[in-house]
Image (cartoon, rainbow, N blue to C red; front, side, top):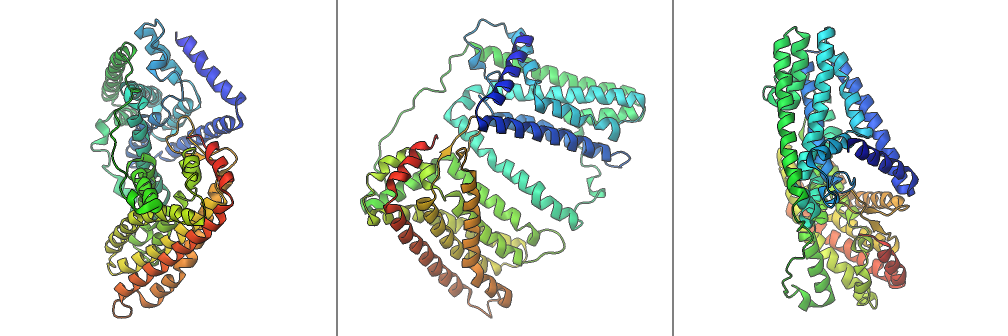
Length: 529
């Protein structure tokens, strides 16, 4: 059974190289990423040799790998047929051989090998002596085995949920903490380290509780063996092996239950009819009502707003962390947040998909097109303005300049008006099909249209930057002091300014889209959502 499933896994990997160009590129990029991770982690662990916090950092790295194996398989659930029990339920397979086969298949591939090779850096950075070297190799094997069994237990236990709509929603919502982690390590942490906020001494004792988790047990077992405490090292490894055995037993029970349980995740749910709010206000109200429901219920839309908040906060880290706090960074973060809203909604036709064809039957001229674009802008403004204003006042308060919240809100208003104008123009003139690929809960540009996404980012950033320039100048010369400039008047003026920009974008977008409805419908039908 193990040999058969490993061969199946290898066949799937080989077929990825012989299928479409997108699948081939994805496979090569994933393999290259695994190689980079293996080399990078091995090098980082080697650098820890002789450091006073080597065991602390090793425990953190081991724990990070375990968290990755816990979260990332949820995104790829169903991508690999060996991971979904429903694919194996029709076959008369015994549970024990099946578990061993699935375990072997899960350990096959670039990423499991990269995990082993990367974590073997502890043989240089933490282990000392022949005894420490042997224990280090055993600890790495048990650590990777723990990660794999943990991932398989979680995905098998949640198979019914992950196969359902709620499971797909969960996978989408997990993107927000992943973006937060990426922004923390990409922007926040380097700035804090550069300003002296985190030093080697601050890591002392970081594993007071981490050492009792399975990854911490593996790291401290290596240190104990290197210090000559063989009994303590064997006890920690034994405890780690016991945890792996318990997880394996729970996985067997979950798999046995999944193989004999009817899948009810695809059953239809009841639909309750209700009047569409705001529909009595004409086409503009109907579009706003529909768009509001999608923004409130669609997980992807909620993820977009969550990403906007996280990225805005991360960009402003230079003004709220460290010793060199520059308030001008807050102005940049406010403009960046507004541009992010425009970029994430710059392809309405592609994001709507085939249903846009039905909507297009009601768009008979410039007047209806203006109502269509304006209805969407109303909803985005109703959500974006209070959300960005709350974030701006919060960041200004944390930075010790609460009065800057008014200036940041003014930047948000002006920038959001420019971003909505540009997003409408791009939606009318540069629409492109979207696709939802297997293993990813988010919608992405279809193959060959990645440049359109990059162009939308640049266009929104440039438009917001130009629109917010007067407010940047006001902030530079007045310091947002209420005695120099009336803050309430500034915010009201920015609101009128942003409204004018957005309304101008609606008029131009409606004029451009009037003669391109057939092309826009073709883009919508080409989207696979």
